Image 1 (cartoon, rainbow, N blue to C red):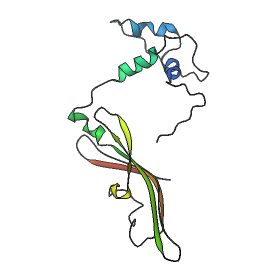
Image 2 (cartoon, one colour):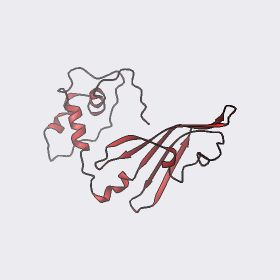
Image 3 (cartoon, one colour):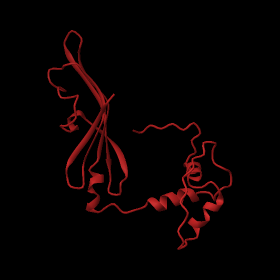
Length: 170
């Protein structure tokens, strides 16, 4: 949901890739020189002490991860990925105020969507754009009942076109 914590955050996360993929430079050799022999299976090791200096050439681990994750998902068989929508209702508040009975409404809502190749982006949204399945703002805009709501709502269509959703209120 756009939140993470890393007390010593490298600018490109290369240290994390080094530690997860390799515990010594010997493990890198099979990846650099393809072979027909099967590689031994080993568990990944996460080293919380930080990356070892001079373990790999600058940028190599990041390139290996990017090369392995680069697939084309632009075809219609991946429409289920592009159907995923994430609504971040950071707050929606409605209440009467003052002697005049004015209705104060304010909301901060973001909609996250996936693009053609799976790239994720956020855009501002509004209560009216929330799907019917969303619960909590049904009376928004009617006679000004008091409402305070926060939630994350995710909906999607699976590969057969069936609708699904999850909502977490907080």
